[in-house]
Length: 213
View 1 (cartoon, rainbow, N blue to C red):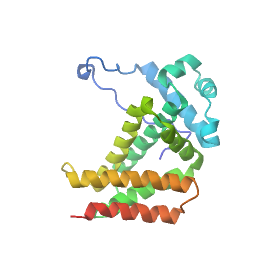
View 2: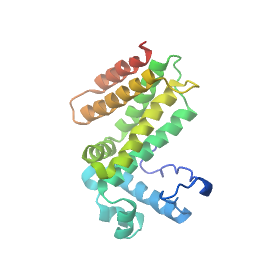
View 3: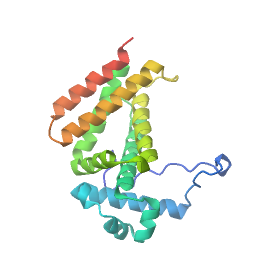
């Protein structure tokens, strides 16, 4: 996972011809850069002091944007930190695609990938705590952003499987359970209710669902 000081990766903007009527228009280059600064500032603040350290006024000052501008991009701190988590996951996804897991079978490949992701979060526990708390606090107004986090986590697992064709319904169901286990294990570790060894064991156990008939 990228370090808090490094800017999050920027997803490619869709071509104008792909625009859907009524959809949010793609960001201009200046808007995209402004958004990157906001996310980078929030990431640094969270890594230094956790959820409570991310104050919208301080984010605006650090990103050199007006407070009203910040709220136009992210209506609340929860929206902002969920977006930070999405960027962190996308960065990890790119790393996994560049350096795929070395195991031959799907289950250990997934377990290796999620263990790698957990170790990345372990290096920045305050950032992890901030992102997970934001996900826990998210209400319906953050539903679209939370769905993106879930979809990216699921795709990370599918990428780790390494198969060429689309997943079966059984695999999709297994991926959902693995995703839930990953989140629950992360919460348990952050709250001190699970050790690193227990988290690793749970991830390996959940990943074995992929080998069931």
